[in-house]
Amino acid sequence: MSIATSAEVRSSRILCALKLAMSCVLWLTAWQFAMMVRVQTLDSVYWLAMLVCAFAGCLLVLSCRTHVKPLRIDITATGQIRLTHTSANAFMRDRSHNVVSSEEGEVVQLLRDSTLWSCMLILRLRKASGKIIVLPILRDSMTPAAFRSVCVACQWIAAQNARPASASSFSESRFD
Image (tube, rainbow, N blue to C red):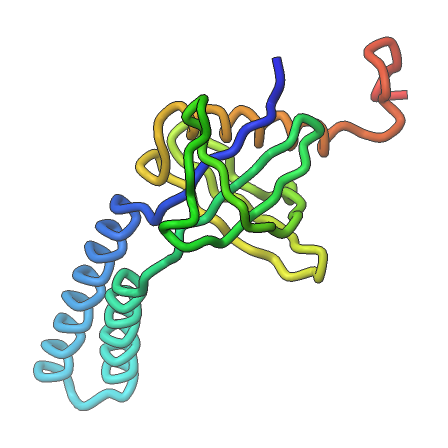
């Protein structure tokens, strides 16, 4: 069995809905702080908390409105990950109905502190330049089969990265 896979990653509607719900909670909190300012004496801490909550709620709404280009993630059989930012019309399908793209991507490395759950992946990836990318992938970001294959491939890569260099075979002990 090979872990080689490629998939198109779209922006998640579930993540956007969660951001909008959190912004509503922040605005309600800001409103509560505004009510406390009316009842209590004028306290600058309440004003500051109210402004911070309202501003954070606005930022979350704006983050949902920004258009994110589709992303292509390619994982080779050796565990190399390549990310490609493409336009929506750059994806084509070959005869086996796999998504292919003509654009070149950037090779990234999966970091140890990535979160790999069966329902969500939060991939922390390091570029060759040292910049770290956080890529949230929820189930609605790609097809179910593609999500499962990317999840299995990332878990395999994480297991390979976690294995010490001295433990090259099963006969060697890791605790010596």
